[in-house]
Structures are given as structure tokens and as C-alpha cells.
Image 1 (cartoon, rainbow, N blue to C red):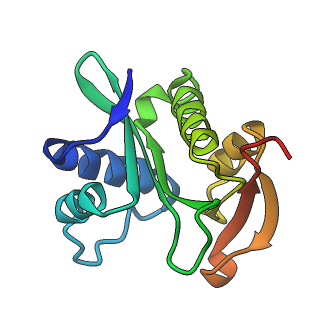
Image 2 (tube, rainbow, N blue to C red; image 1 turned 60 degrees about the vertical axis):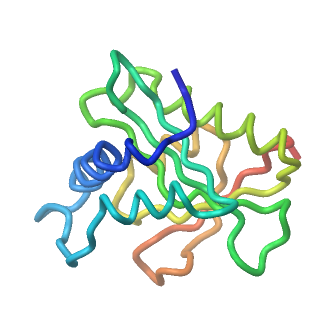
Length: 155
């Protein structure tokens, strides 16, 4: 089941976020002191922000966070976070969650979506390519992240 996240989901989102991101950092996800539970609570509460979750057997197993960045027209959205529990990779959770994002973007009139994916995260890059995203080269994080784009309307 895909649904909109609620504040009570923040602890589960933080745990999933850290577990999934640690998979592409050889030394584990760097601890920069961020309170991820609080960060997810803020993302859920932020106006014009959307956080979708995939729930299986009562547990949050996937998440997607997106919004129109400041200064962008409302037809543009950035996918800021997209994570699936590593023990459920390649089982359809990500594809189902991605389809729900695209459905919402189309309903909202979004014509362009973009994301930045860690350059070492080849698994995620391949997933996005399978979903129709195109590589645009390096994004806002310099040489560490690739920028990818998608036209939800199929353009």
C-alpha cells in the first residue's frame, strides 16, 4: 500500500533512510550530527512537500520525498529522497512507489522532474534508468552526484 506519510512515521523513515543510504558508503553512512527523525518530521510538515510511503505488513518499507524547489515553476519537481528497505530490493516496492510518484506528478501538472543520485550508487542509477530517467551529468553536488531528469507527461 502507498500512502502519504504522517508525523508518526518519522522514526521509521529515519531508520529506513539511514539503513538504505549506508549501503553505498563503504564506511557506512557518515554521521554529521543530523537528527534524521526531526528532519523527516519537518519534511512531512513542510508546506508543498510530499512524502509518500510504501507499507507492507504494517511496516514502512519505502519512502519518496519530493517538492517544487524554491525558485522553480510549479510544473517542476525535485525528488529529494527515494529509499526502499535493502532486504526488499528488486521485489517491486521501488517500482510501485515510483509509479505512485509519477501518478501524483501527472495529476499535479508536473512536466519535469529531476533528482541527484550519488555517483557511486550504480544500483540506484540503474533503477532510475529503468523507470525512464535520463542522465544529465553532474548535478549541484559537484562530482559526487549525477543529475537525472524525467518527463512525467511522457514528453
